[in-house]
Image (cartoon, rainbow, N blue to C red; front, side, top):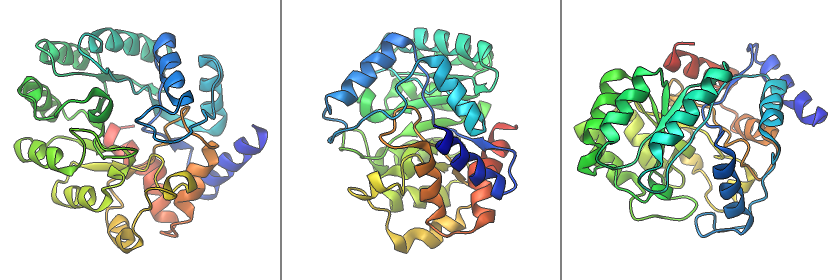
Length: 291
């Protein structure tokens, strides 16, 4: 751990940053996180390969680890896999944010009759970011039950970190087409495409180029682990450089199968320059969340 801390802090200090902003981290109720870890342990069908959890520690130790690394702001991305979960997950996240001031207050939703009502309540309580997971939740973002939710979040300008790409395995509602239809109806939605839309990188870059409020997070992209099965096409690096104001650093901490420094070294290996790294690792998220 000391070596990891030295690597991470050396990275952001060399860029002249005050620290990192990580838009894709997971803090969940203990029993939910235990089930998530158990799923990874048995290499469930949505992981498609062995996936050792790098930071399997108690909540307070995980918080201490991020703080040692110099992560100044992070998220508690929660997501339901069935109806009836989102409301109590939001209650837990609101309490977590209240006792964890460096965590951006996070909320979630699922297509169900009261989704618009509890989403509005979460926004009123101060939620600053939402999480949507089309793969785990196995729902179409264009479900009519969600239309008022998307409209509310677009109007309020609250970003939604969204797992919509088809990695690690395709789902019935993953891929760019459902998102194209969603953005056609809600073009002002501040959607953050998790994992850069892996493996449909080019299609999601196109959406970011078309819609000025669409962002991309770097979670697990470019790492040696991901490049083995879903390599980023090098021909699209100029487009990624051109989207410098819309790319956000994310790690997937603590559920990553490698050390945290690898997420940063992977970005360095792109050789897109220090100015790009400064925006990705701090500036863009600071602007998006008004930090």
